[in-house]
Image (cartoon, rainbow, N blue to C red; front, side, top):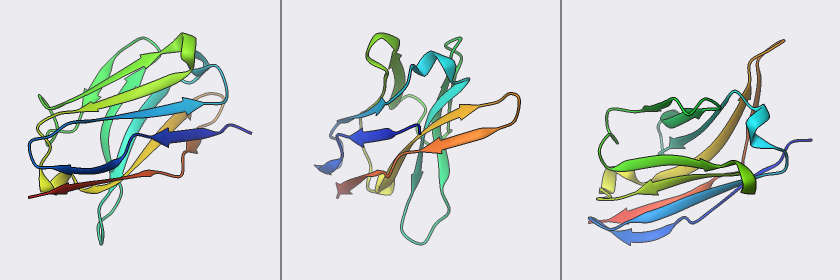
Length: 118
């Protein structure tokens, strides 16, 4: 069974930075898309950033210019560098891995909490 383990969350002041890591139990290149999602209290889970195995990257408008997603295939790890953090970035951040074919299979980590104080 695929396991995704996030780390790097914590408490940071507004304007600060954090780097999240997601270690995957399998070779990440086999997944078509890797990504980060977040869920704030009382809100639905939303996409933060994704990266394909062809290194095509997509960001939510709310994090463009502040967050950077990257991957290290040799370490089976995906990162999310978060700069200029805002209180509205407070959420549980989840790592995701998608296999598209022959049918969509989605894998999730348990999440890591990021709290940004004002």
